[in-house]
Length: 315
Length: 263
Image 1 (cartoon, rainbow over the protein chains, first blue to last red):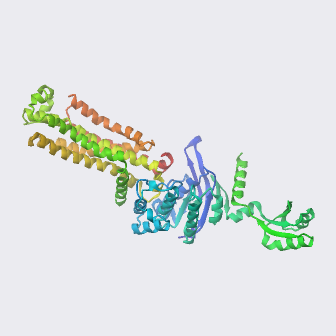
Image 2: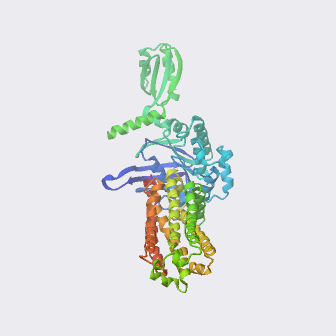
Image 3: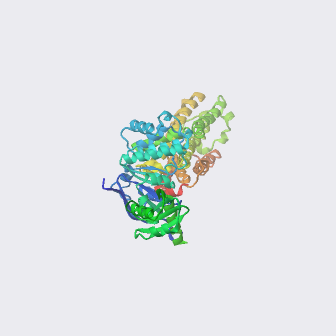
């Protein structure tokens, strides 16, 4: 496999024609490294599922090009399908067949050599072996989701698409799925994950793309936070005085310093390098420091900021 | 071909767990065998004049009787009225199966993972079609064999058996029946792509029964006589109809269309 498991160039998808046409994906370009967990974040209707479907060779792009696991979509669709595993938004299992029969059917479609072995491996791995003979219609949502994950992995695909992998799961089941995704990353699989759970994306994804028909931002969660909000350090003081903020503002590297309650909040690029200088100056100015910590902006803040900006651009 | 059979086996495992489908496939042949055999049984020992007025046998049918004497000709006439029943079976059964199997994929949302698998549209469609058509064809053939044995046993006449094994019946059961099944499945596939309720799909697809019912009624009222040439023409027309319906069904059964329109 090449260094990039997925290469997307100017991928565009329009549904319909003429004035009725809907632009679902607009000129998307990105590369996903082999072994990377990549999060695709965006509101409902942003085109995430359409993108996944194009990258699974399920639907054809209107224009642009994409290479998945070394195979170009539109030209080597069967090869693409063999190399990817997909967890669809809804698990989609045959309710009247047993868990084992469901998996065996898909394993046969994917030409899995050792069907009983692979089925047993993933049923055991996801804790469903004891229920293998039960009809899937009797399964809880969490069990069905786990079964759908097992189905996506039966043929050991190097590339995995997970569309809302923990949607609707109880916290325990969601944690199990997240741990499983982390384990898959350890195995070196490339994963594209669509999720509305931004905390989950923050924890699991190496990089995220914020998407609304077009790519609004693309980087690691930490870099996105830094780019949009800078880094903020909070100094808890015994007594907050305006002169302390003024003293710190004198540094070139400080972008902003403000007092909030008994705290001094300083925005700067590189806290690790500059915190000692700030602390020294505060102590010299007579401040009594009680605690120093970083204000961590969540990925949700990043996401909402980008979406507001996007709406502002179009509104 | 392996993947087609993988599909067929999955279809059978799934569809026959549906009680309504299983009931349709099992009950209909029993009914369609019981009706003609019941009629034959009730007329056992009656003279042709008692069984039905000779004037009720159309003159055109007399030619089909060949060397059969009056009583045998009357019985053969009665039995022949039921030929069309055996052509309804390969229409109704696959429509029931295909409607439930395809709409079922929509309902359980299994279409997307299925279409994401490395199986061609043709393999998928062939698996669905064979899964619906084969049970109908085999059940029709089985019902026909039981009917022939039953008719001989009830009438005690090997002459009837000889008539029932003539090319007219064999062509109808062995060729026209499967061709009707293909037409029914193709229509069911097309209709299923536009509706979400299997019962609606089934009812609309059952329209393919109308020509067969028309022949049945026409024959019953003496308007037409279904002889060998009618069956041959029917087979030829069905070949063309099947080709057209199959082409259309395959064209409609595109992955993107299915994913974006099958809701």
